[in-house]
Length: 312
Image 1 (cartoon, rainbow, N blue to C red):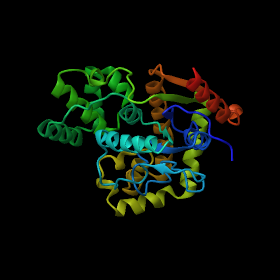
Image 2: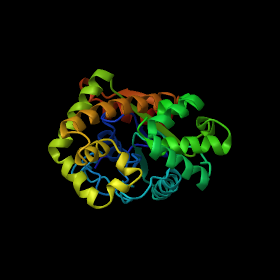
Image 3: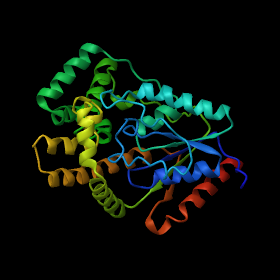
Image 4: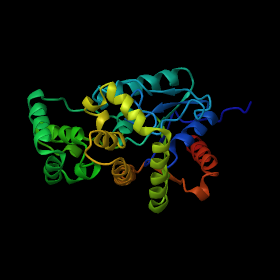
């Protein structure tokens, strides 16, 4: 058995959807005697498997994965709670002498796990008023308001993501400052090497289209039907997930299934661009090519990068 190489306390694999983060995370966990800690906000939900491209047990290759399938689809996502759970897992693995490999493209969740970061409180009255407004006027109207108050936050949040728009506007109203002003500097809690998986947009767009095709072929519509029976439509966060939101609209007769499929591709491409922009702003991320031509070399290059960071 090959001896594990020295590793930093934490490895993080980040970047846009469909770039190849999950497979790289497994490879790095194997190389550095590690386990994966999920940082994809939608993979936290039980039963949301096909539409989130959750690795199967076989694809995990025997590497333990943590913080998958921990929330019901009716639960509202809470990044502060995720921060608590992620740090518990990371600290436990470190105490056992294992390497935590944080993998995911949910930027705020990655930063919540790794960085010095406190989340502003909530005001039930403000939250209720904004939620009522987003229900009556739609998320687009509130996104326009957010763009005027905090353009950087608006660029990072999809116009369809009513929950995150409401939260950003709530924080602005409570603190009197832009939502992004409440994000701290790049101060880490753990010694970490962050690896970004970089794929050029034309290739990434093609991968996204192919992934959505595979999701439909694998039974995404039936998965959504099953989750609808478990309360998905009432789930404030889960019902807005890419693919799930579009299929729910088709099941409600608001569009055809083909239209839902095409919109899932379009929305996912837009989301991938926002993910990429978020991680590009972090100077600590080391970018490696995840292009098809470089895919075979990616694990080796990532391992070398981690080893250099340890000995630097």
